[in-house]
Length: 272
Image (cartoon, rainbow, N blue to C red; front, side):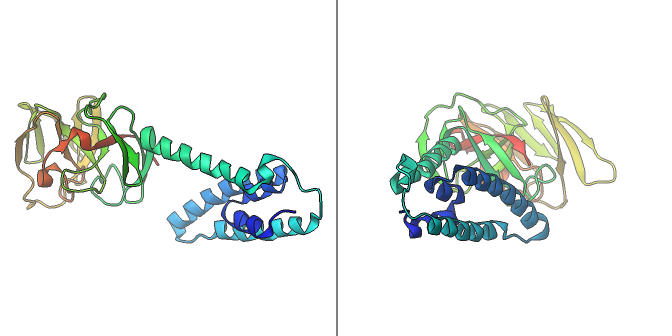
């Protein structure tokens, strides 16, 4: 006989596993699809209407459904590995190990918490960063492995998730200066190694289009009295000078200095 308490708890937390445990593979597949659909709906409902709850309703329905199936099983309960509590639990454990590895060493999603990268990134936007080759590997605030030398070098104009030299909270910033660069910033103009970068004011807005190499993006200015409008630095070896696109409302290298290469997490490759 199936353990009813185990089935109920499993159905509430991970419905497909509860039905797999009960040898109801078709229902397990149905609930897996429903979880994906409801998860997407909840995401957009919460984002645009500040309401959600579909996941909770699905979990309650799965508990009631699994209880009905349990009551219909009187004998002949399956003898496969997934009909054992320890067997079915190897699936989420294996999945969590895979997710931990994937987030730590390959790609990791982040949510934008502030306006420091406006107009490029808005509060609540989600980004994915590529972590391969940058030397700092970990997730959920834990560092699992750190390489002394990075295989990939961030390029000017690219956007990176990183840790500032003063703390352990992640920031997302644009690389402006690489090791050895002489960078100056004055009167809304960045000059790198004596060469002004290309800029173009966008009429009717407070934004300016900048181009560094092959990368073109927009920045915005809000406060003409910002004391961080004038900067002149030389980027030391193994460090990077970074700035936010929201130039008057960004905590970046103008305030807390250069970012060591071993504090670089990964390059932004996707926004949604």
